[in-house]
Length: 333
Picture 1 (cartoon, helix red, strand yellow):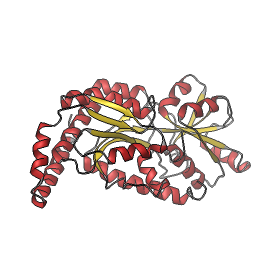
Picture 2 (cartoon, rainbow, N blue to C red):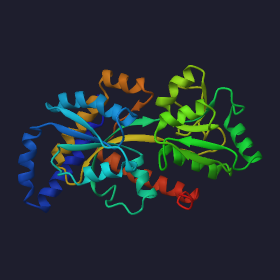
Picture 3 (spheres, rainbow, N blue to C red):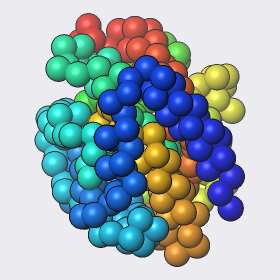
Picture 4 (spheres, rainbow, N blue to C red):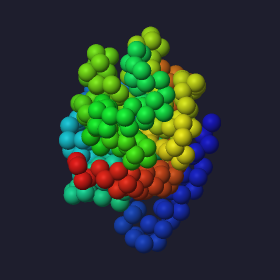
């Protein structure tokens, strides 16, 4: 099932033809690409080991390596909201030996940190989308909040009394909470944590009344009856929790704030290496074994052409910008 390969190849060939017209020096690049890869390929992950992005990178590395007849290895580069990892990728040579698996955080950084040393769109070569992460609004199982309407009613009854935990400032979960605050006209306060685990611990221990989290770390607690998911901030229901409505269905049409992971490379990657990397990602993503592993942590697989990923990242950056503006996120950062 290589439904995404043909358009990518066409785009790459067109791009290659344009480059060849524009610059005769591309022939050296092309011959280097013919022998590629001759050594291991590094996947930079902008988060600590053990998180969802790190796990997905590790699920992909073996099958991608097989498809490319080389080995791939993961380098976790956490901290700084992912900016140092992005800088490492962008400053790497565009030779196909360094890629990164980034989350939607990569696009939201462009909004939350307007003085980045790089252009998140122009300074990369997009490869493919890989995963969609469903984002949930959670409460402890014994909470008096059973629906999104309950949450909004309680927040209106006691303005400023309710807080919500997230895995960090500028995450898709932070944006979901701030968009809800703005759309529902409620006064709720974010409590940012360093990752999902400590936020879920405090939710389980009733230190915070609400958390907005990715489905992966939350699902075991929902299944065991300790936490309740009241709504999904992404634009469609999750196949893992089919009974939980989306925020859009619960009274806020058009509401969508989810998380995604994508593979990118430095700017200026040879078009035929881009195609080979893209095809290897799609082969890995669509292998039943990798798909099962990714679904086992609550994530859903997806793929795209490089062009589709480029267009999606442009639209997502705009979405984050609109949300930040509407919810005045930068005013009280």
